Amino acid sequence: MPALDVSEIAKLLVEFGQRNALRGGNPYRARAYRRAAESLVALTTPLARLIAQDRLQEIPGVGEAIGGIIKKLHRTGTHPALEAMRQEIPAGVLEMMNVPGLRPEQVLKLHQKLGLASLAELEEAARKDRIKGVKGLGAALQNKILQGLEIRRSGQHQYHLHRAAELLRAAEKNLRASVPSAKRIMPAGDFRRGCELVSDL
Image (cartoon, rainbow, N blue to C red; front, side, top):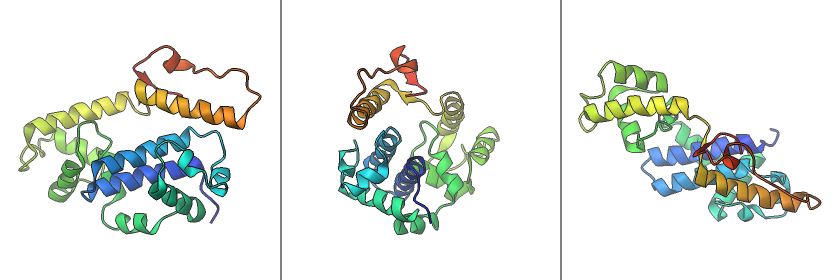
């Protein structure tokens, strides 16, 4: 199997974190996977070179454990732990974790109690008042889900300003290392304009 590119590995890292969170794992660990994934996408040095030079831990958010997972994903295209977790929860359930305000344990309950396995099913259940009757969820969460779905539609693929700044610092550092002849590197677009949500780095 050909080695995965950086964006594919980043997606798998996010999936790793989401599936860990659904298992009841440490929520900070799930965020760590996402942070490492975002840092990977901002790389300017080829990932294969960083792996060969044993420099993965120079990437912001990548420690020894996540570095080991990245190596395995890059080499084989998958990871045994990820494959095991995929047997437990359908892929569509992970989409629901991207709804603002919806916690992993609530997503799991929605899947287990109502059989919801996609964003479309979640929205339909919320619009048809099926969620408010589930013990431990209620009407307030149902309204929050509808608001969250709307927010998700309008703000997809955007970074908050502070996260964009962190990623741009890492990208600038990588660019300076890989293109030493560059005289000046400047952020542009949404970030330079000071927008709270940044679409493109």
